[in-house]
Length: 335
Image (cartoon, rainbow, N blue to C red):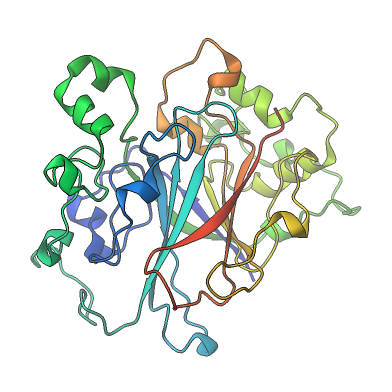
């Protein structure tokens, strides 16, 4: 099975309708394109458990499962990732899974056309925060999700101080047939991955573009140990598509960036709804930081840096319980 990769083309233009719910986008930043439009998570579920500030939407991945044993339960399926941009120590992440059958309350069984009318949560009486696109609350007149976002919307100085919405990019998908060949114990591949690529074709912001990386990302990637065998495997595995920001490899293993903070089996909690042990589904790569355009921090520890963000989900993608089910994210950061 090949690994599916996600990339961003900064120079391409995406029509706005392609970023809406009815086109089931995979994307970074902007506001969430919710799948189930009636049962969007409450504002309290999308607030940091430490500082209580609303989480920032990082990305969403459209990941339907068409295997026969799922019996059509995952005809549409999207995973959403949020993070806290304010907590610098032990940063909070949240992952939500939403899925629908082919016959559902929102979408036709036929593919949407650009001229079709838009489908929004408002059609089901659900109001979204005008600042972040998450569910608003009655407490704030169904216009905002929190006092924090109300303040930001009404105060120009705060708009420049807090990150609420990240730059929006569509995620392009491609298959990487050769990515599984790199192994920690491989003895038949002695070539350096940097020698196999045309230097002129290396995208700015990728881990192969060492000159284009900011210092904090470079330090994070190496973890202070240039002889780390995991990092050597990491470089080989991404060499064919160094600009990848997503690696989707459901039920397989993550591509770790270093030997530090690799989870044990008991570090990954079981599904809280069906009790099955969660399994790996996809990972977010550090190259995504290049596209987020986050402001530089003078203090290294305060920067939003990471090695790998590995998302673990219920292997059976169970249906019972909440419509947006919380899954689990493991942050591997060698810093």
